[in-house]
Amino acid sequence: MSDIQQELRKTARELLESGEVGYIIGWGKGRFANQTHPIFVKDPAKVDELVWDDYCLSTLAKYTQDDKYPEKKIGICVRGCDSRAVNRLIQDHQLKREDVYLIGIPCSGKLDPETNEPAKKCVECAHRNPVVYDVLLGSPVEEVPQPERFKEVEELEAMTPDERYNYWADVYDKCIRCYACRNVCPACNCRECYTDQYRVGWQGKQNNRAENQIFGITRAYHVGDRCIECGECQRVCPMGLPLMKLNRKMLKDINNLFGAYEAGLDTETKPALGHYETNDVEEFM
Image (cartoon, rainbow, N blue to C red; front, side):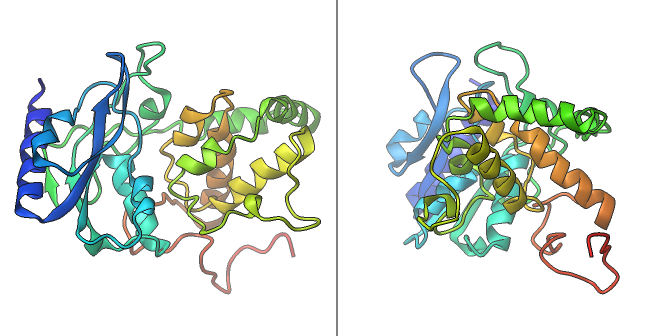
């Protein structure tokens, strides 16, 4: 058993027994050794169900949205990605900082349960330590700079327009519109998603290339300056679609137009597209 796992269980027990939190959101073991899943622990006697191992991949912050008005604080385990998601939800007024107790856990990356290789989302992670927390378990780990953050985007940009169209046409021919990407994304937190509305001339419900492409590009725009690059959308996609390429294209353009920007590092920095200045670039006008 890892030292972090022992410390996590000890901290969770103390928080629950003292009544400081109503429950803890963490990871529990799945049916197989290489599986974990989010769990909610309310009983101090069950804190030993919490785990911290090589397969704790799920980003947890989105699960706070199932309890908008908690009677007590929600305890939640946060790594770099989870903590950025919490900041993102706070900025969107979907979560109050005083409603959560953040158990910070430094993370050196996790393994893909199918390949047992480092998970892609973790390889691309530039913030492995939580950016906000109430208690930190263990010691901070070394951060890994990502100089090739937009490498895959640049490869797409190097294609001809026809090549790019054919690439994305092939991608969205495979989409089954299950909305797993939307459901797992902490930046997708609208009270009612536009895809669930029924309006003539709005988002169609058909599963075909055109409608799938409209869904993909609209979602990318919606989360454009709010994407924390946690990679959950791509990880949970049952069809293996390269969704982060589209998200990072948006982020690359934002960086080029408005300067260096990463979402969720704090709650003070305004989203690049959430405000305007009179000297903003207006090439489209």
